Structure formats: structure tokens, C-alpha cells
Image (cartoon, rainbow, N blue to C red; front, side, top):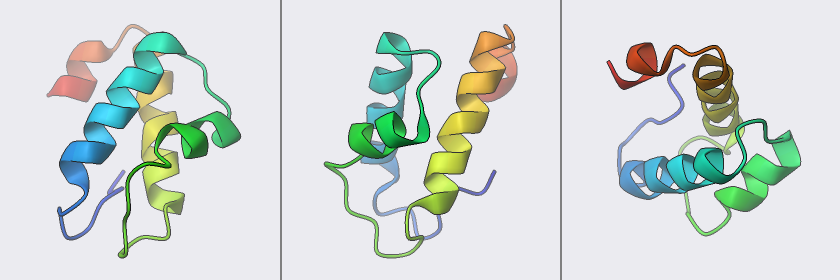
Length: 70
């Protein structure tokens, strides 16, 4: 979903998203924004990152975890 651009914040966003989705497989947009709030991104304005996490949550819920990892 092209959630990230320069890559500087990528590790933190991925770890935050993984932690959030392991605790809450169906987060709201507000919960996602709170879950990544400790990470700074100057490139995206966070909207694409939130959309990417929502997409990952949908795929994980659908049992398509292999597609998300690949």
C-alpha cells in the first residue's frame, strides 16, 4: 500500500504495527494512530501508514498472513 517513503521510520512503524495487531487484530483508525504515535514520520502525514496498517489487519484477519509477509 506504499505506506512509507524514505525508509527512516520504517523499522519503528513495522514494530509498532506488529505489536498493535498482535494485541488488537481489528483496530480502529484512532487505535492505529495511537499505536504508532511514538514514531515520527516527516514524509507521509501518516495517512498512508494508517491505510497500510488497516490493509495488513484485513489480510491477517482473512488468514492471508503469508501474503502480508511476502
